[in-house]
Image (tube, rainbow, N blue to C red; front, side, top):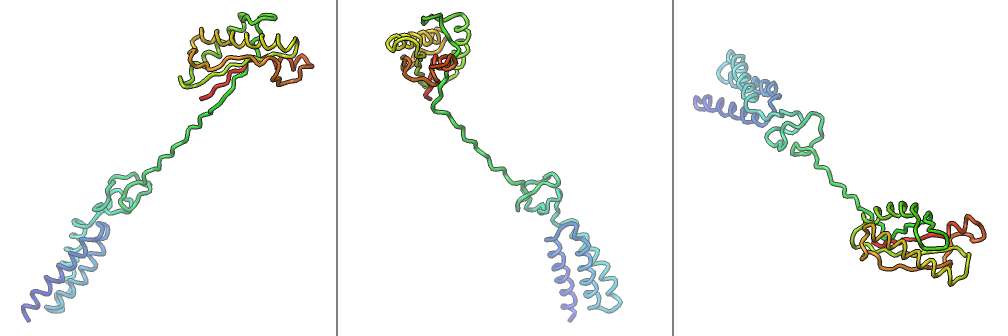
Length: 230
């Protein structure tokens, strides 16, 4: 019986301390309370007078052990320090089971490349009844050249000249062709690669975009178009 009285307290005390080790530091009051009850029971195995002392001693030991060996949560994210892989997480930041903030999913925005674009030049008027560029025309084409030099080397440029319906079909065909070449030559001299131009032609009056019966319509029809294929 004496062996049982000696061994039983050690077994119970070891069980209490082992259980406390798996708790949080903040659970030390619980450890102390459980330890107190256990201590009282251990004391009572000797005599009733030992119950109070046993409760005090074992409760204090259990509470202290829980504080020292308990698993804390230093950053307060709800994940014990023993398995918190991201300690010191700022307060209020949501975390996963490992105590780490969720990794944001990268959003890849697809770049939409316009395969075909047409630049319409309507404010290049040339000299009267000719394909010779005026000073104002050259200033406008300098802006177009700067724009085209930004295109990739693989871009293909097609230049087409257009006229209104004044004059014969044959005359307008020749004039539109000369004007298309005049614009192209200027752009090449301004730095646009010659190899980018895959075709230069005139369409004469065959492709109107407005009514040739009005001055406004004829002005819209007199144009040079540069089609860009990327």
